[in-house]
Every structure is written in structure tokens, then in C-alpha cells.
Amino acid sequence: MSGADDLERMNFVEQELLRRWPESRLEPSLERIAYLCDALGSPQLSYPTIHITGTNGKTTTSRMIDALLYQLGYRTGRFTSPHLESITERIAINGEPISPEGFVATFDDIALYLEMVDSRMSHPLSFFEAICAMAFVAFAEYPIDVGVIEVGMGGEWDATNVVNGAVNVITPIGFDHMEYLGSTIEAIASTKAGIIKSGSITVLAAQEMAAAKVLLERCIAMESAPIREGIEFSLTSREIALGGQMISIDGVNGKYRDIFLPLHGLHQAHNAAVALASVEAFIGEKTLDEEVVREAFALVKSPGRLEVVLRDPTVILDAAHNPHGMNSLRETLAHEFDFTHRIAVFAPMGDKDVDGMLELMKETFDTLIVTRNSSQRALDVDRLAEMAKVHFDAARVITSSDLPAALETAIQRANERNLSEASSAAVVVTGSVVTVGEARLLMRRRRGLNS
Image (tube, rainbow, N blue to C red):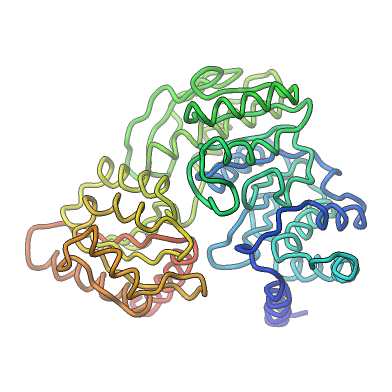
């Protein structure tokens, strides 16, 4: 097949997958995915796995773990969700998205099995269950040395929880998906603790006390050795640097100094410490080569996470979609950038804690442009504007019917402000992974037109 044929066939496969239950609709059960994996010969058990859950930081931490393992000489498979621009981003081999041809071939390998399971279950397989199985099969056929598998939602009944993680990683736990995970930190932590398997190692990012108690009780019950941030490993220093930050980490088995991390934010430094401890736990009781660690972290990318996509004016994309993520964005903008005027383009989903995010945004952004992305789950713009005016002065809120128009308005206002007075205005696009993915594509097209 030619490249064009591959893309056409891939688009067809993606539409076939999207006809299934969407990721936002769940029936908490492992029955369907377990049945499917059994029929496929349990590909997810043919390689060791590092399994990652938490509320925020999962995808970036997964990317860091992947980069470290690959730099250490392992063949890696990484499964993350959701994607920003292309569905192939979800299934990465040796750090690169699977090819369109590989994506199609993997779907073809399991298509009949999907139909069989659909016919035998009261509910058909969901989109997430199907693509999760595709990742397991793609990794087994490559084959990989280690899988880095990110939970989609929760943990206990997430489709990824048919893996038997050698190392479990739990990033900071906060409030999100409460309609499924529960309304208390303890309930959410209990569901996420479901990935902790018997005899494994569990790496815990710093947690609120209530969450830490639940996670440690699960470790004890499952005889899983806990490795805790702030006790067994820690971030020991951090300095802001051009294009990112310089960090030092006391790991589980060694001390790693003067690591350049090309990402912004204290939260990313903590993600790096968690990732390093996770790789140490996986490899065993030995110190990693410090130069290899530096090389791996220097190459880490986390698209859509405080990602600068334009410099004149500065446009930053950040996929904060809950108060925990929005607080990290607010803190980083306050301490690592010196903009005198900030314009937010905000397009959240309707099922998120929008009020919680707006409350955190009101002191950070001078102008708020409310809009929507293309998702059916996007919050209605007029409703969003009403909510925004509870937190912002009405004069600071601008309504835009769609994301492309909102982005152009924001860039124009930033340019006008930079030309008319001695200021440094920036645009920040945030509120949802979908919003950031669409903005990323719009910005790439815009750069192409202006080049």
C-alpha cells in the first residue's frame, strides 16, 4: 500500500473504532477485555509491564519512563490516552507512534475477535477496550522488552488492568471523573489502588495523607513493596533554566545530579523523580548510568503540556482539564514566565469541574476568551460565559463561537498589546486535551501559511 492508501485505511479503521462506546462512557468491568485477551492468547502477559495511574501527570510520566528505558537499551511499547492529534500516538514503539500501516494491520489481526466478543457479551467492547487490545497485540508482535501502560480511568476496572505489572506507578491523586471514581479522595485512591498486584513494586508520588493511607494499605494487603517520594526517593534541587529546568534526584539506588529537563513546572520535576524511581525499581538494585539518565531526560517531550508553539506573540498550550492541573499551570506561569498580560483561550468539557478551574484562573489571566472544541462533550459557550462571569469581571470575558476564531482573536489582542505598550502578552490555550490537540493542529497550519 502507498502512504495515501495507508492513511485512508487508517481513517476507516479509526471510524470503525469510534462507532463503539466512547471513552467517556463506561461500564466498570474487566469481563469483556479479559475475555478478548484470553481469546488472543494473553499478549499482555508476554512482556513485563510498568503500569501507571493517578489523576494528573500520567502521560508525561509514561513518556519519561519510556525515554529512560529506551536510552538504557530496552525495546519499549508505550500505551497512553487520550491522543492529541493522531490516534496512532496512543500506541508507541521505541518512543515513536505506530505507523498507519502497522495500526491497520493490528486492527485486522483482532477484528474477528472483536466481533466474537461483541456477540457473546451483553455489552459490546468499547473504543478504549478495543484499542487497548490492539496495543497489547502490537507490542507482543514487535516484540518489545517492556510495556509502559497508562491507565485510561481509575485503575481497578480499567481495561489496562488485565496486565500484571511488575512495577505499579501512582502519580498524585486528586478529584476528577467523580461520577465514576467517587466523591472523596479515599474512594478515588481505592479505585486507583486496584492496579497494585501481588508481589509487585509500587512507586508512589507524594500524595495527600488520605490517599497515601489507602495506597499503603493496599500495598500491605498485596505484599507489594512501596517506594515513596520523599522517603525512598526525592527531588533534591531544581533551578529554572532556558527552555526548561535543571534538576537533581536522589533515586532509590543512586544520586543523579545536573539533569536538564526541557519541560516547565515544578510538577514536571516531580514527575521526573517518579519516572526515574520507577525505572530503578524495574531494573533492580543497581545505579543507573548517570550520563544515560541525562541523555534520556534531555530528549523528553510532552506535547500539549506547557508547550510553547509560537514565540511572537508567545502561545502556550496546556491540557489542564481539572483544578489539580489548572493549579499546576497557574503556579508555573507565575514563577517561570514573566508575562505582563495573559490571555486565556478556555474550552473545557461539560462534565468537568469548570467552576473549580475558573476560580483558579481568575487571578492568573487578564482576559478570558471562552469557546468550545469540536467534541460533543464540550460545554456550551453561552453557559461557559455565564459561569465565567461569576469569577471574572464581565469586561474581561470574551465569547467566541469556535476555537479557530478564539485563537485568532487571542493572538491579535496579544500582538496589539505588545505593539501599543511596553508589555509582554501571551496566549494560553487550555481546558481540555481535545482543545489543545485541535489548537496544536491550527497553530501548525497557521505557521505554514505565515512561513
